[in-house]
Structure formats: C-alpha cells, structure tokens
Amino acid sequence: MQAAGQRGGSSSGSRSRHVVAAPAVVAFDFLPQDPLSPLTAAALLSGGSVPGVLRRRPLAGVPRLRCQLQGSTWLPDPHAAAETFQQRYDSQLRLLRNDCTHHADALIAHLLGSSSELQLNGVQRSSAQQAAGLQ
Image (cartoon, one colour):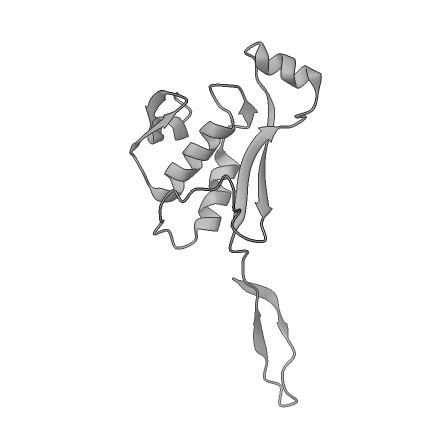
C-alpha cells in the first residue's frame, strides 16, 4: 500500500515514494450496538434482534490467548477482502441465527474460499449457507 503523498527528495528535484505498511494483524468482530443495555439483553434473550456493529481493529500482534490458526489464504489482499465482507454482512444481530460466532465462521469461509462444513454449538452447516445467512 502506498501513501497518497510523496516525500521531498534531493535538490535535483527527484522524489522518493513513502511506503506505508498495512497492519499485519487486524481483528474483525461483530457485537451489539449497545452491548451493556438491559434492553439489548432483553431483546436478544426473547429471540429478537438488535442493531449490530461490525468492527475492524488493528492489533499490536497476534493474541496469545483465544486465538487459533484457521488456515491460509491465497487472496492477493486479504484485508481488502475482509473489508468487503464487513460492508456486505447483515448487521442485525440475533442470537443463534446471526451472532458473533456466525460472523467469524462466515468471514473465515470468505477468506479461505472454503466450502467445507463448519460445526458450531453442535449444529453443522456449510460455510456457504452460513455466509449467505441461510442458516
């Protein structure tokens, strides 16, 4: 990724490009818009849905806890692919239908190009169905 601007060069008028690296580790997640609200808890526990927030957070490094390698991608720009996924993902959060675990599984399937079966909470479904919000 290159920065839009350029740095000044030598007195002869030549310029060098300033290269800005994208963060190597980025967390993408999905949570309720107001996670601490009793109304959010009541709506979710009664089977309803609430507005969700799809976040992107740069991290200082790979977390030591609660982090698993899911595979490798051959995508030329996985960060851009993840951003596109975030823009298209349904942001209405509903427990057991479209929650953070569904989001994580669908993002993994999107980045890895996987059509394999994923198992979550004892329910098996194809990643393609999940990414489409069909299950």
